[in-house]
Image (cartoon, rainbow, N blue to C red; front, side):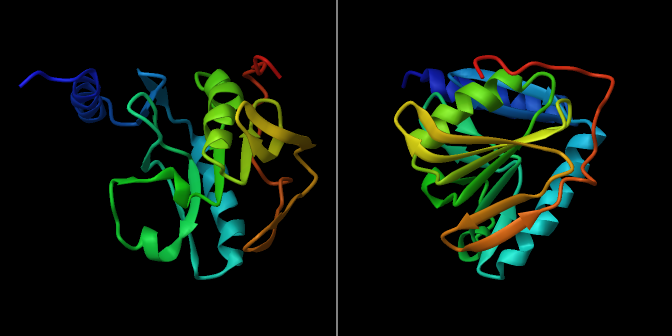
Length: 192
C-alpha cells in the first residue's frame, strides 16, 4: 500500500513534536511549520482565555489542538472558542466548523501565516471572527465578515484600548493594557 504525502507529513510532524519540546508545530500549505514559544506568547494566551471564559460555561477555549482544514492544512490556533460539549470530548483533532472565534498570538516566525495565510483559511471555512494579537506591534487586529479570499472587515486596536466583541453567543471585552509587549523585536506584517 503506497504511503501518501499527507501520511508522510503526519509521521514527520509526530517525530518533530517529540524531538523539539517547546515548539509549536502545525501543517500549513503542505509544509510543516515549527515556531518556538516565548513567555509573552503564553501570558497573552492566558489573559485572553481568562476574558473569554466570561462568555459562559457552554463555550470552551482550547489551545494548540489540531483542526483539520484539508490534507495540506492542519492548523493549531493559539485559542479556538468551541462548544464545551465538543471540548469535553478531549480529542487530538477537531473539524474547523466548530470554531466560533479563532485567536492567534504573533511570533516572529508566524507573521505571514497569522496575517495572510490563516486570514484566508479561517475565512474560507466561515469562522465568524478572527483576532490577531501582536505583542511586537502592540496591537490587535480584529477580522470579521468572512469571504472566499479572506475577511472583508478589519479593525486594528492598539494595546491600551479594549477589544470589544459582539459575538452571536454573547459579548466580551478583552482588556489589552496588561498584555505583554516585546519592545526589542520588531516585525512587519506582510500584505497588510
